[in-house]
Amino acid sequence: MTASYETINIRLDGNVLSATFNAPPMNLIGPEVVRDLVALLDELSHPTAPRVVIFDSADADFFFPHVDLTKVAEYTAEAAKAGGPGDASLGMLFRKLSRLPAVTIGKLRGRARGAGSEFLLACDMRFAAAENAVLSQPEVGIGTPPGAGAIQHLTRLLGRGRALEAVLTSSDFDADLAERYGWVNRAVPDAELDAFVAAIAARIGGFPRDALIAAKSAINAISLPTPAEVRADAALFQQLVRGEKATQRTAELFERGLQSRGATELGLGEALGHLPAVD
Image (tube, rainbow, N blue to C red; front, side):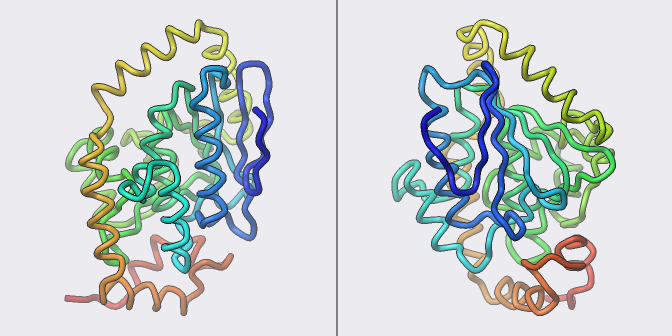
């Protein structure tokens, strides 16, 4: 690995790369994070890249709370650099993450909502701290369906009924429920999470690269959404997120403290339930 990143701290240990997101004040997915992701995924696409990548966060409360809703155009423009203007979406960027030759592992502490959850869903595996991990797709509560992979991944992982529950309620899911539903591979006690993930990564990293790539590619061929499905979800999100209802509800959330460290962000699932009902 040769690049340095503004919002990602990287550490290489043999065949395993640790990539820690560090974008104060609260790890919002904005243009800086997306720019770094585009560059990192490009490096990880090379044949000599590490065999395993562990993604985690330097912020104990927030893995990724969601996108920076004040900079949608800016982060979308950065995402376009991964695939061209026709693929200017986080969904297609995250699909590139899923198709890396490297095995990707998400290690979750704190909250991963919206595109933060969708980033983790694009990883090959997800392990969550039992005491403090939270997952959510809050988009419907704001006024739009998810647009960066949640519809596709959650339906495949959870089944129709549970995917509808997760998406339509916009509720927060703790680690135990997320494990039971299949949103994460396992919920692990926080004190054991680092060692548990490190052991899995080291084990996989010691196996032949060609076998890892071939096995992952075969499973991807069965399980990943097509580019057309990802683009359709992204187009619908980008249309409705600019609509009157989503704009109004987002403004109400900002008045209550959205995108600042406080009760609204810490308990966003509950906050959405207290917004006025709409037609």
